[in-house]
Length: 116
Length: 116
Image 1 (cartoon, rainbow over the protein chains, first blue to last red):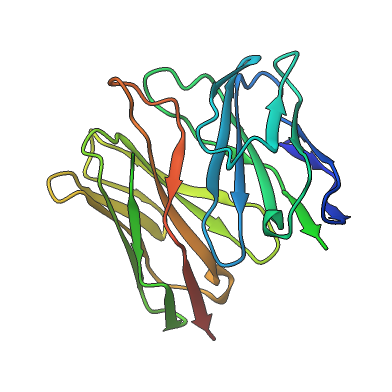
Image 2 (cartoon, chains in turn orange, red; image 1 turned 30 degrees about the vertical axis):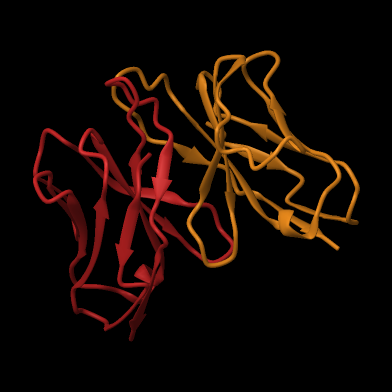
């Protein structure tokens, strides 16, 4: 079956612009995570969805970042008024219902965002 | 929150040698410890994971050991091959209220180079 997909694979934008990054999780996976990975670093948690609701958005850096998952499947990460410091690879991951014990997270290929 | 420290940051070995990467974590309630392999420009992929009810798990040339008392876990790769060259990340979940929904804190990564 298809894995996690993300579009676009690369996004170059100018400082101050608005961008949307899309994640299509594995079918049937209820848990969806967004991470951000800067060069030479491990992924850093941004937000977690269980179904349609954002169960934990504590990793979002500020109010310029927002994410939605309206139908409990595809998710969109939205960044307003982009800054050069937002440049990174944005990774999406999904997993089956974690319940009391976490399950394997399957990562997408990421979107490389470059803010000029 | 969870704090994960990973060492070494770089590791260079000759083909056929063993490689060991170590991680420590801070939250004694953490109960799941995955290891991810990330090749240049690719997505992180799970190579092995261990839950807190076991001390060791092995899968062919890869093994992970867990010491809950000391709060550290290690990745062991035996008979290394050039294709093992990649960045390896350990991770541990944030546990809140006795449950973990899989929000992962990652280590800083280890660049493993296996020389033919």
